[in-house]
Image 1 (cartoon, rainbow, N blue to C red):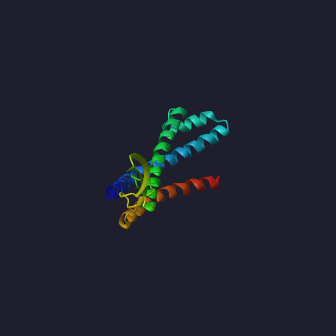
Image 2: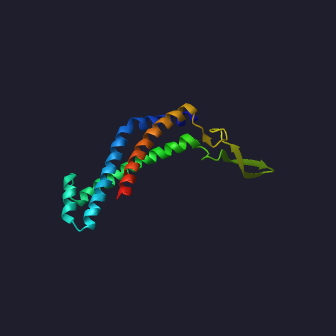
Image 3: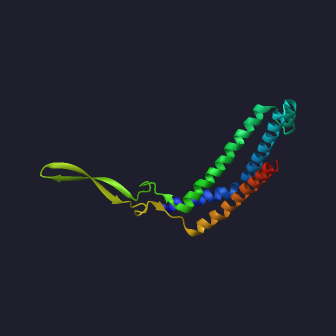
Length: 172
């Protein structure tokens, strides 16, 4: 059963590998939307509503509601990629929590003892046979290395865009 959990990790890594270009596009789109929002904010602070609306039009938006809709949907998609990466990072580096014992390594069972005509139920603690009492399944090193390689690519994209944003904010 642990092998199927490890296989699931491999599938999730393959999905990340397949989606790297799409993630980069979403990240760049997110960066563009933040840039537009900053420019709009500047226009609105200077009471130049017409300039703000022209700016939106130049970027292909028909108004503020359409811009916010695009921003919100892009932010949600970007967040889902980051969450997938974080969840996989946790599973790969800290192990996959055993679904049978919930990570405790033990199973609480009921034992029925009959003595002198009385039936009594007692709790019985057993080591989980699914994870062998460990509570987690450790991901093999070769799979960790594959994840580390794809994680580095995702983090490079995030870092590049963060640096651009940070440098723009510093220069203002």
